[in-house]
Image 1 (cartoon, rainbow, N blue to C red):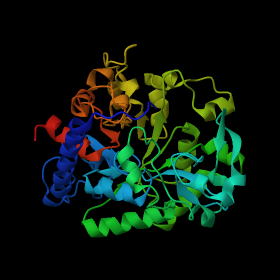
Image 2 (image 1 turned 90 degrees about the vertical axis):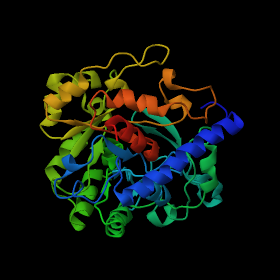
Image 3 (image 1 turned 180 degrees about the vertical axis):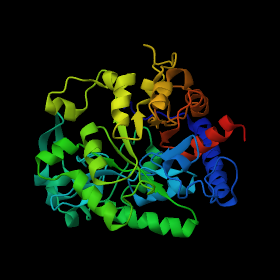
Image 4 (image 1 turned 135 degrees about the horizontal axis):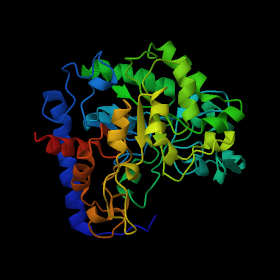
Length: 387
């Protein structure tokens, strides 16, 4: 990431405007205002297709405003109007518990480097073919991980979030399931979550299979059914196929860049790329065991060499024809993460024009979107729907 730059009061004013809108959005959820998820049955027994559309999914919570995958981030995502919270990216501990971290390497998302008692745990591993140096969840017991605290992952882009460094611990998936029930009771509407199995082939080779652990916890809390408010996702199709045999939950295959291969394909010698999976035949294959796809936004609208949006692909229509929903990732407010034609200035931590970008993406017919800034997404949806 580029070094932090400042554009002073102008950036602060823009941020305060969006945060002010966020407060309105949070209040709107209670009042049933347009663009919010209200307690009118849309989140009820109808399953994932009853969610408001386009669905606003809080990416790792409200990670635009709080360190990701913390209860502070998850809670704020609901307050800002998210229909679903991505809680969380699931990785195992040495003693087999599932915890919520963006990656098994936790040097960039916790204060582990400040703990001298864990200095000897720093190591280099090959994670999905990539040498990675740091500290890994599978080398810690749950009790040890609970002594750590979360920190902001991208401080150059989100210096304001560093205010909250050290405030929250690493949540377990079981704690998330209990939190979901608690929030459903408190808010008077069903809270949805959208966990992901991270690097399942890597962990299965270590004897720490993810899918069985996920299924066991979902069954324990009665959330393993077709209409349960838990959507499961993974970048590895074989993980979703395995889950399809274990639980009844809606399942989503995540899709990275067109020229990449899912790591389970690499490990199994399957030559197919993501480009093969987004063809009509590939989508029909996915639809044989999953209900949706989570493509990178570039698969919906490619960018040119300068980073500007070009012409949408046929992916939305092709996926819908196969009976699949589309929840692309990830919309963020900061300049570096937006298409070039929606950036404003060059500061790495300044907001561009996410509303303009949301409009273009929503016009493609996507069913929802992952966003680090749920309040912005909720307002953009209201604009798009003419409310």
